[in-house]
Length: 221
Image (tube, rainbow, N blue to C red; front, side, top):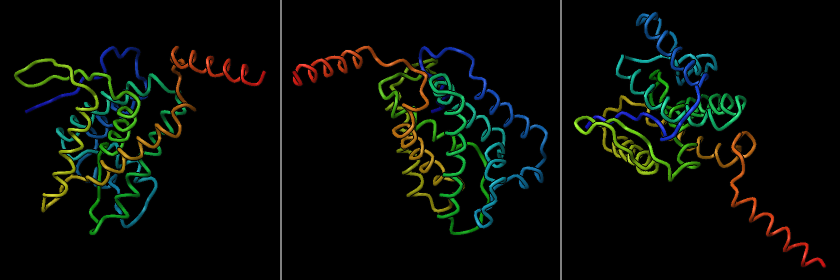
């Protein structure tokens, strides 16, 4: 079944950085030939920092590109709207480094890797741990547009990846990048969200804090 994520319900604003990344990926795919793309890939036995970044903007074919861009736009646009520019860019850099280093550490053969999926899974991890109860609008073949809980959507794809990783003999997908990206996104959310978020504190939390403060003052009297 073909499922295309369209984004978080109620998302608004223009995600400038997200669109820039999408555009960069498209331009590389359109103007770089096969030899150029291979030159941009990351080789796990070389640990070239520059290739770590060039590889995420490079894709094997049009379906690889479109799949990554749909998922990237779906989740990254919401994160971009809720954090500062510095926070979004820092998260992007962290995901690039973590996923490529994890692949280099686990690769049994020096097979080059390319694609944005590790970064995509980073933002999916952030999204899940910040908005687990929100809904994702999706277009499903033969069913048109539907809404799915973010937790179910993301965890379902994670389960499929784990199953494929465990039972596929010849692996052509960098699942290590997916898993390490997801973990990095979850940890980034827990460690740095309050530092970079532009969201206002929830009213309930302010009241709760005020109640605790009042209780503390009363106790001190």
